[in-house]
Amino acid sequence: MKHVTGFTLIAALLTLGCGARRFSVPLMPPLIPAPHALIAWSESFDRLNSDRWREVAVRRHSSYTAVELDGRSCLRAESQNGASILVARVEHNPDLYEWLSWDWRVDEPVQGEALGRKDGSDAAARVYVYFKTPGLPWQQRNLDYVWSAALPKGTMLNSAYSSQSKIIVVDSGSSSLGTWRHVDRNVEDDYRKAFGEDPPEVVAIGLMTDSDNTEGRSLAYFDDLKVSRVAP
Image (cartoon, rainbow, N blue to C red; front, side):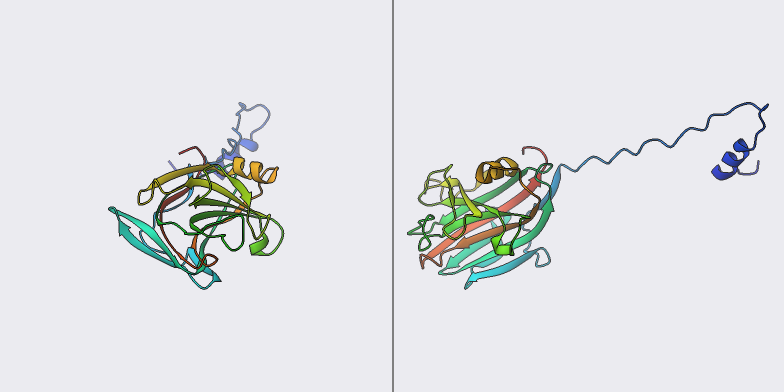
């Protein structure tokens, strides 16, 4: 039998007379949106991808290299009286992808850290989340998750440089030095607590170790960053 295309079939049905048997032509089914992936973005640091990560100097440079440690690939972050930040463009809606998780390890904390003052505003390990807010890039609102050598876990305070940057201490002290720690943060909830309103779109994630203000040294490692839809 000659093949009949869908268009030919529909045309034939439309030209049937009134006395012909009626056919019902099904409507197109509604479009069902594809389910959102559980993980929107991840980084395992098998290598330091220069297409993904850009180093931005703050005052001189920190050193960032992909290494093997404890049988895992990770990022080594070392500072000697310097400060620079690794930034990756990561755009997502924190109302949908609200969780940020990572592993980190501090081997050498900052001596003389005092995050509330400019002359002591250094930390061995920081994870930044930047939001789409008015102003130049360094003026945009951000959450600065810190492993502090001095402040207790759970402390929240303004950066000594800008009230648009909120420091949140998520690990603290020296009892866990040299060991990997896992962190899960609900970015949406943290933004509301920090700024008193719902968060706008996330535009970037940054990693940093710095020791320029204290003129000292720090050493940390980062691994297994994830932006996800549900709690890890």
